[in-house]
Amino acid sequence: MRKISSLFLVLIVFACGPGKQSEEQAFLDSLDNLTLDAPMISEEVIADIIQQVPSPLEISYLLKDAGTQYDFNILNGPSNVSNYNSNFDKALNLGIYGTDLGYANIYEENQDALLYLNSIKGLANDLSIGQFFDFGTIARLATNSKNLDSLLLITTQNFNDINSYLQGNQRSNLSVLILTGGWLEALHITCQVAEKNPNNEKLIEKIGEQKIILDNIKLMLEFYTADPNIADLHKRILELEKAFAEIEIIYTYAEPTMEEVNGILVVKDNSTTTINITKENVGAIRQEVINIRETIIS
Amino acid sequence: MRQVINILGISIIALVFSAGFANAQCAADAQANACISKLQDGFTFLKTFKVDGQGGAKAKVEYSYVFSKDTQYFLNVCSEGTGTDGIVVTMYDSKRQMVSTNFNNGKFYPGLVYPCNATGIYYITFTFQDSQHHCGGSVLGFKR
Image (cartoon, rainbow over all chains, first blue to last red; front, side, top):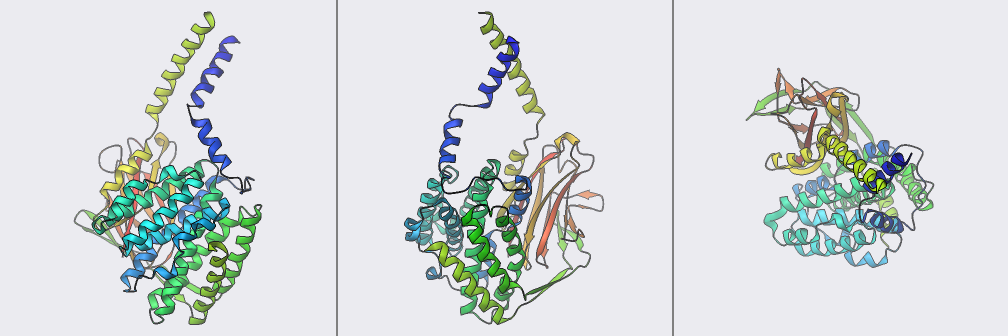
């Protein structure tokens, strides 16, 4: 019996490494404004849905490739960071600023990128996830446009690490809010740029395609509607869903073909999608996104 | 004194057990991170995927991602062993129809380029064919 007790003691010592307890406590303390009720489904299922959401960087690259101009005025002002007091607001706006940072980086607007980085630092520290951002390295990389690849790599890795950490600590609700904010901002930027470039079909199509991601966002938020803040956000997303209702995405499958090019396999995708979306649909989506975003950033 | 000896003895046993267990585990995280440097030039990093077949106990490791039309994706495979160590990555569309794989005509390719023509949810499935370690990682990148 004495030996068994000793074994338990050893295992407890092994399980609780030095500093781990205080770190976890600090993290839990930071979640004061978020309901800690666990959702009805497993963290694994939520993680599966979370990982499907594409990076907002893909949209920023589309905007740059389409030849559209960088526009700081459509982004969330970095100084608004002082308005965010609850962890709900902080997590959503961390996602929003993450998208704004990526947009500024891709357009090589280094000064703006540094401002966003500073806002992100404040929010991340408040949420006790600041340790995942290598702010010094990011700031150094951001000062030289030759470092764009490294800059995008490190910022994406940092956000991925945050998501993994939050999911691993049963705090996927924060991860969901960061992703929701990031996605909403990417959609907002696309809608604003599309308004100024009404004949750019690629942008309009990209807005229509967001119907697929919207389904994921809605589903992820649904898991956490026990939290009144998330329940309210979920309701607003349902309004946005109505604006997307008429959009049709028609998928046609055709078998792919493959060929080897310099030792790498290159696939020829013969499948297609057709997006049926009108300018009225785009207008309705744009307005609904403005409405939701206003409640988040103000 | 006897109690101290007991604790010390059990500590040593626990250490030996934990070290042995760690060796048997798949360092899929490290494999995936090491794979980032093998991303083809011109592609922007998106995600890493851990491929842990649990020593053969797990036949399939699956992830999913929304791929976008008019975007090229690069997916590579890194392994603990030589080459891809029998790790096969296959992509399926949302209706589970195959859209690409790194195993073609009996050959394993360390990476594949997928120029997406249809936006939607895709499944990225890792399976093992005569794999020694059932352990690896993968990186997804994109370019327009």
